[in-house]
Structures are given as structure tokens and as C-alpha cells.
Length: 394
Image: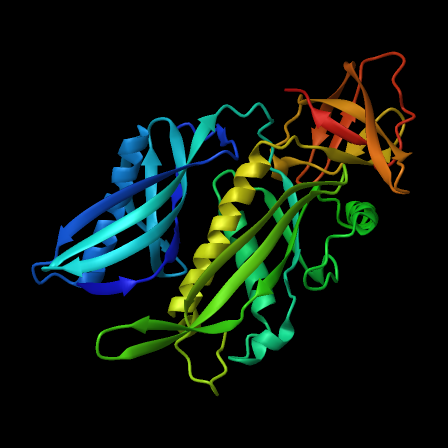
């Protein structure tokens, strides 16, 4: 029996027939398996087919029908994408084992299948700001010269999130959200202060930030009868957060870990702008891990309620910082929210939104990035302050 791989993480992109529905964060892990007779066929092609068959097997056991086809990411075949016609969406696939015995390739996978729920949120494109991902232990980057890996991860996070179907409106800055150090917790006071600053400075509701916690190397020994085979492998652990800057809430925090063979020599400094690195075993695993995080963030954002800031108040007309790029049209209706900061027992303050659902604002003019709103109400509350919020009427 020939052992092929220890564990690889593959991300499965699901295109749902009812894509207007978004996904709940609850997931069901289902195991599947498949075999393919090699019979002289190219082992990589057979491997791809076996993976797809194993994914289909897991999905059938869950009660879903899957039609699989290849997916290409940055020119690399990295996984399969699947069309789910019933019951759920595939988010990730973990390949547990791959073995060859008597010219037959066997693959066992675990598939993360998320139930499909109706999302009652609006269909406007969310406004998202991505800040730079930091290397929390820069010394770990010295082997291979991966000092700019944080910048590369940020760029790829932004690129992949922008390419999602029903993609949010994404911006990116070259500054880190915070200077948190290894194993320290996120400071809630800093979250509050940064939320206020970023909301004012950039006007995006959601902030995506995070840290690369671990890129250390380790040796893996595979004991065989006649020899000990030592393989140099490298970790990749990334922590991802999603912050609602308007409401000062951390909506999402998740850690993603993977590892892969590090195939470069001790003295070689890789060029992270070169496809040679991204085609390596480690580069591919990094891409797959980032893509898995992007899928979860995109699913989260689809079900979060959109808010826009009031950026101007002039003679019974309010201007907000959402427009055509977000999908707003003339005639759309919104509710005004007065935002007040209420002190809490820990010395921080939390925003409280006060609104009147019977008082409606209507869009009368819209351009690419802003909209003009007014109301027919006689006692229109034009005591609205700059940076007060509005939300769409569902």
C-alpha cells in the first residue's frame, strides 16, 4: 500500500440555485469515500476524480445531489465546486486519507455541509474594509524570507471576497487594525476607539482584520520498515475577525489552521509574487485556507443587516454614504436610527440605536456612492446628526 498524503484542506465553492438564500453558521460534517482504478491513468487526474466522487458520496449521504466540476484558483486546480440542488451547501472538504492498493486509488473525505436557510436581510452590497494581516512572530518568516506574507494574504483576501457572487463593496488599506501581540486578547476599549475612527475615516460598515499567528516549521517522521523518511513541514494559522464598525460589535472570529510540506532549501528566499511559490504544496494550502475563510465571511455578511451613515443634512434632505454601487435605487425606503453611546460598568461605552419604524425616508436621488433621502412627514425629525444611521425597510 502506498501512502500519498497526510492531510490537505480543500475548499469547495457552492453555487446555489437559490443563491438569494444565505447560510447559517451551523454545519454538518459528513464523511464520504470513493475509489478509482488507475489502469495506467495519470495519478493526478485520477486523484481529482476520486476527490469529486468522494464529495458526491458524502453529499448523497446527507440527502443532497451534487454535480461537480473543476475549480481553478489563480491558475491552479485546487478543489472542486459543486452545485447543490437540495438541503445544503458545501463549504469545505478535508481529505483524510489517500492510498493506492493493487492499482486502485482510495480517497476518504470529510465534507462541511451547511443547512440552507432563508436569510431575511436586505440584498444591498455590504461595504467592507480590509486591513492588513500581521505576522505576529516575524522571526518565523526568516526561513524562506516570508516577511511580506501578511501583505500577500491581505491582497488575496480582498481579491477573493470581491469575486464572490453578490460580492460586497470591498476596500483595502495598508495599515493593520491593531498591534496585538502573540497570545494577547483583543482589547475591547481599542475596538470601540478604532470602530469610531474607521467609521468616520472610511465609511465602511464592516471591517475585516486578522493575524497570521503561526508559520513555524517542524519535522515529520514517517517510519517505514527499512528507513526513516523525515519531511520538513510548515504551519499556517490565521485568525480572522469581522467587526461592525457602526455598532461596535465583533460579529465573527475564527482561527484556521493547515500545514504542508516545505519544499524549499534552507538558504532559499521565496518570491511571494512568483507563481512558483503559490504552486508549491505550501502555497496551495495557504490559498485554500484563505479561500475557506473568505467563504465563511461572505456567508456571514449576506445575512447581516445593512446600515448607512448620514454624511450630510441640508434643509430636510439627508445624504447617506451608500449608492448605486451598493444597489440602492430611487424609491427605496429607509428608517432613521439615532445613535447614542451609553456608558457601561467596565468604563467603555456601547452604541444604542433608537428608531421610529413608522417614520420612513425615501430615496429621491442616487449616484454611484451616495443617496439623497427625504420624507413626506410634516414633523420630519431633521435633528438627525452626522454619522447617525439608516437601515433599509425589508
